[in-house]
Image (cartoon, rainbow, N blue to C red; front, top):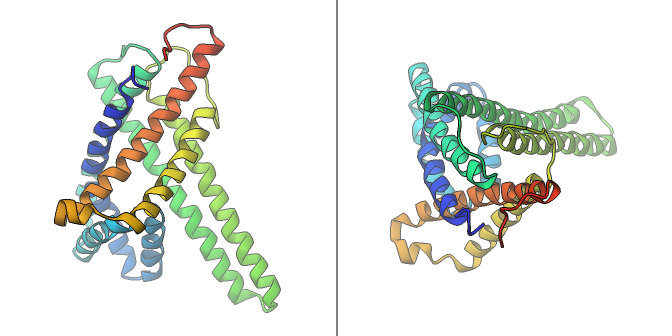
Length: 272
């Protein structure tokens, strides 16, 4: 990890994630703004999902921007926001490509144009997967509410609601695993690629991300000194810290897979 400058590269990814957040948020909120006029329940539910992963101290800033852009959404803004978010996010994907090339110790052989097109394609694919993650969670809640209205037995209603939500979350978890697998498979310029639905590195990265996000939320609940140190920028610093953790866990998972692959093929180069 030290040899590949993982901690510095995670900071680089955190900047690109922040850079891509608000165009993506603009696009998503504009789409939701058009839908929320007839479906406010969907709007509220998605905000609740957002609150599950983003640190509470930073959520207010994110939601303020979310609400401001939603209130003024138009079809033209949706189109512009979608294009801007894809381009901004593809810059972050390009950084992931460079970093994973270093982690897997491969040279970039793709031309600049080909690498950027690949980054844009991967961005669109990951965006579709993450949209399906939200759709799966929404679908579970929708089925739970439908069961509440269709059934009369309270015990059967409770069981059906629990099963519906568990299935929705199970599908969402599987799609999250798929997003890691797609990133590790498509981002680096590896000659011989092998597909893994759930590699040890992906499992480590996902579990580490969830635990680190939870740990950050607990720390901020008891020891939130960012506002004292950074003033009004405290929420932005917290958001950057969470993005840093996200990028770090993505790269640490790749390091785990790289070390295992190198050990399996008796390759040198993974140094302590």
